[in-house]
Image 1 (tube, helix red, strand yellow):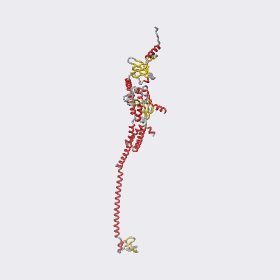
Image 2 (cartoon, rainbow over the protein chains, first blue to last red):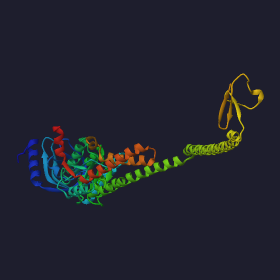
Image 3 (tube, each protein chain N blue to C red):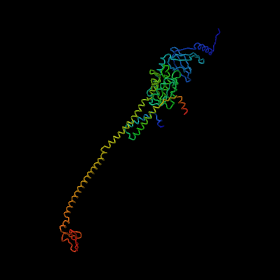
Length: 391
Length: 71
């Protein structure tokens, strides 16, 4: 028998053909190790169990359909085919599909990422930003046609219609969802006027919610300069994004309630002022009135008035006294006058002349004594019935 | 009026509280009290009607980005 000598290429070609034909469609369960996501978008990893390992590649475009990012130690079931790469002489699995070997695997991945990010401090309270009380613009990262967004819209309209919602429509489940969510959080951060971001979606299975357990989303939330509320699924669902966000809401509706003030409360608040201001003003005015009337009746203000009234009283007294005096004097004068009049009357010369006496006048004066008569001057003798001039 | 529109709703509410505190303090004169009272009443009216007449606005981020580029 003639010895058949094959070239390396020939044997490799035969192996390639044999392997690729025999294992054109296989499913393998194993644990991921040395996982590398290359910048080109391709994935390289090793699948192993306790006794063996096999190289795997998963090309960009295909791996988009994997809803989770594989982690080392994660047990997965892959589907694909065996390929041989002649230049290196090795074989590998060209992976077409990948799923977790069980829900436990996702839980484990979740716990692992949670521990890792927690150790890095991404969940620390010191990084939690306060949620603004009166947001003017809220960025929302969710599916635009989902029930969650409808709920958020109606709650915003009911509670605080002054707000503007900026919807960054996102894929929220399946392949590429995590990358889309992360991208939209970054885009909203490039806007100047967004006060708050809500990221979330309605309820679903663990697989449905998985995008919110991805590291890329967690880091985008952590890096956000704008406060973020995470609102994924229902009350019972906790995701990595809940831990890293500034605030966790049980549901998207709850997130919008946390994000907005209540219109009715605001009306009540404003109304209180509408009542308070006029009441307060009346109070202030009546306080002033009170103060004024107190001031007026105070000792300081009363003094001048007292002075005035005491002075006027004094004046009254003076007038009274003056009047009194005057009248008394007047009366006395009158009395004297009357007395004098009667005296004069009693001394009336006519009565004496009537009786036959006569009086002598010289230079208009009566001459009542002999020594007063000036002999060389003329004089008059006044009789009752007339005067006689004597030269 | 345009200046008032620039003020956010939150600022208006804060101002209402400020006015209320000032009136309550009793440290402002009568004339100033009356001024504050008028400002407060008008502001309360404005806030009330702003909130009452408000309608929720929803914009797509894509749209906003395009508008920003145009500006």
